[in-house]
Image 1 (cartoon, rainbow, N blue to C red):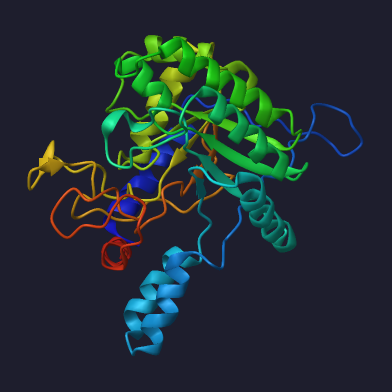
Image 2 (cartoon, rainbow, N blue to C red; image 1 turned 90 degrees about the vertical axis):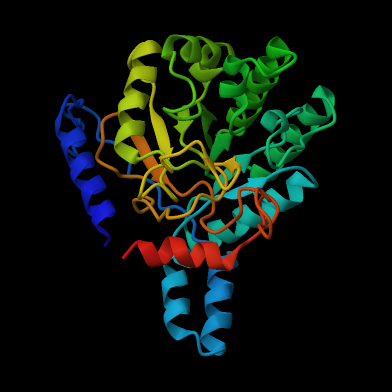
Length: 332
């Protein structure tokens, strides 16, 4: 374990012991307060790129590098859905997870005008196409447990003002929450950016409210970013307080072990795009022991590029084994 990971664990321990709500449990005879249900075990996809890369490198004699990549391949991570035949794709993924006895994690990232011109731009052609896609995707759930992170960047971009039709976007998010929750099996977290994006948590909470947060299971922080977990938890509490104090949240810890890059740019590109010197964050878990935090998740797959921001870098979402190796190696 790296020094950065040890320091993060110590900070999280302090957060867990300060200002948290009591854990409520009961006797099995039904007296007292209700016992909480067991947290889910998230799905480890055997077809994830790190596992295949580790096997290739082992076969080529890169045994040590292959073992390092297994730190990625053996951990649960999210499947991103960005368009296409969603029903079949979701059905196949959830079937494999069900056979493994685990709960899959999905990310929906197909909203019209997604990313506001940043790397990975795309999305549905219009509102009707998006609503049809969400319904097709929900049909693939078929009552099986799934955790969903809904539309990274969508709410924060609406607050920041780069969206042409804010009311239309928020209506699509509300609709997506309702459709996903209608499956009876999906836990849904609306993405809410990260601490270095929107400083006005009151405005963020107001837009989350308009986007359907009251019908969702909570919000998600730090998706595909590098802000440290302790900072995200503190920020999450502020957002939750602005929503009334009972909103829960999840945090993407996939690459935040060293925190964000200290500068705004690196070699002429934004520092959120494949920054050097970063490392893996805390292990994914649905039992983090932190107040109001439902889970620490690996939402962005470690080793997938953030975009072709500098010469020679792969396009957004493309597996980049050498970057992945650096993340694993710096984890200690």
